[in-house]
Image (tube, helix red, strand yellow):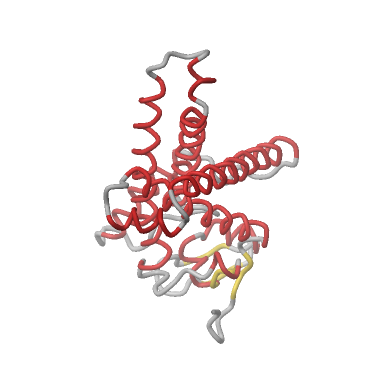
Length: 242
């Protein structure tokens, strides 16, 4: 999957690759089993439900996968929080003011008003916004899913109106998440001109040096102790700091 004569830089650990694919599989199963129940009147939904062994089996698969997804999400949040608070990990996914200015800088670059794109760090604003959308959406899905799974327990402490509200929110968030993944994530990982025909980082954990310099110049400079000159104007030259 790696091109010959191309220098690659390690970007993701094996743990992050496995974590990504576990979440991807869980998400796919939740979408398939959840939306087929919600839109059961369609022939494709009927085919999915029957192929899985009926509605009871489909519900079991959906709920079991929901538990797996919940564990993965909470473990990720817990690990990240522990790492930042106690192991001095850099909070690279925190959204800063610079991320909003990077949006404007890239828009200017796309319209030919500047000569180089935004100088992004380890994760750019698109990755950060998508990440927090997944986290926020995941928490909503977990909370509403539990409410729908245990309505009697929930209504023992909270108003009964919460259950139909949770059902509407659970379904709408599921559709929104599905559309975001299909339109936004798949485009950036497959059809974007900068990665087409496929972004292989999530398979190999490595990124081409030229692409890293183009998309994540600040991280490249920090990793190798160099200053990139002429960034965005062909191949940048490297100079060691004085």
